[in-house]
Length: 607
Image 1 (cartoon, rainbow, N blue to C red):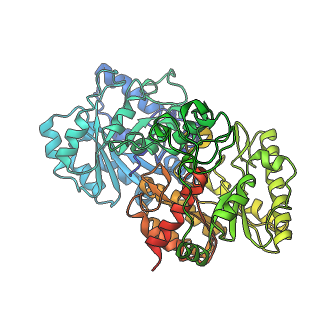
Image 2: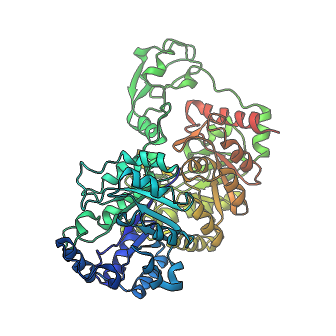
Image 3: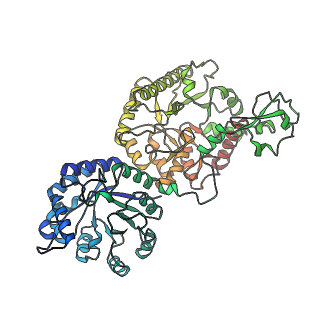
């Protein structure tokens, strides 16, 4: 999936003030735009001395009032680059380029405005600079558009559909031309927006625009020619978010598969059958012996319909959930699968209440406690925990029913509660280490970014160092592009993309590599999941492993995910560290999902 580039055009909305221009650049950077663009006209070359039309008089006054010198623009371009956005500039005649002399290379891209669309000398001059170019098609005929784009290097230019009205009425953007222009051009195209409503850009993105250029302002009602057809920083932030997510937003043209958030809601809000009274082994499980109650951890109406009336294979106590294990015993794990699991250091996720059941079902010797904030709020009894096993601990994702774990939240109470949960988890982990005599790592999902990625990784590297000094290792886990927090969908912006790899290496952060999350991410961020596994191998201390389907099918059974995931799974299985099998709800129905997963791994990857 390719994210569209959003360019914030400063134009003349700085009102001739370098300070305002600097503030606009900062606001654009905070909104997440790819680039910012300046305009330049040498005033001595801009207008003829006898220009007397009403429009000329108005425009000359505005252009002169909003003039910024080449030196000022270069300083602003340097400020933009430091802020992490690409600086670009529009020229109207080739001679104006000379005013920047050798410093012209400090711009990352160039733009030819619509009024100069047929200016072949300008096109040639910019093309010779060897940088990326944008060119707007507004106000020109089909014949002129065809003729001009024939002179462009397809590898260096992106033509932009444009309607040269200021502003463009909601009924007049003619967005269908985006597809037509792409057919003429034979490559990526974009949209230069002067629309009254910024939301028109969303339709342009949906129709395939790979670049959106739009003017930025602090006040759309301000005095000036371009403010009314511009967008505020808040609107740019929304536009950037939609551009990042557009491919995901319009996905879903194939067969329908519910995402994990939907499955969570189905489980938490839906109902399944529970025993209304004791049912003896061998006794038929009839509808009059059952009640429908939440949560849906067992069989719902449609699933139970084919099983009702059949005998129970085991005694069912009143209040117990009616699941598939009531009608068929969970198959035993084969010796081959058990040997494979032990050799590969496979582990299973457990809660305190089902640890003994999982130990009996799959005696792997390795288990990971998945904690809730309620678990760590009380006293944890370590007496039932087998000291001969090897354990790891998953930090609670939540610190309350409405708040994610966020130890750097700007809200003091949220920050304090997050650190309290972290400290309690650390205390439990140290006690577990003392009981077993072996290192017990904590795996955490750290996903909230406040002040950019650099700040995010610096803060967390310091935090992990603090806990390491206390004798506890915390491993941030690789995250998916979309997380299903609270049963909803939340787009994540850390620990899931290629930029994070460099930060992980820079801070030498030991991590937990989640293969399922990684394989979902490669459908959004266009990386090779297996290559990432190998790249981060030196810093991978722990693995979570499951298959994935698309960018939101989390924890599917091995072999039921996308075929290309196999390489990443195989690469992770070769690591000499613990690998926690995280197939979705594997513990339900008597643990049948875990048995199936361990069996499938042995069958698919043993030799």
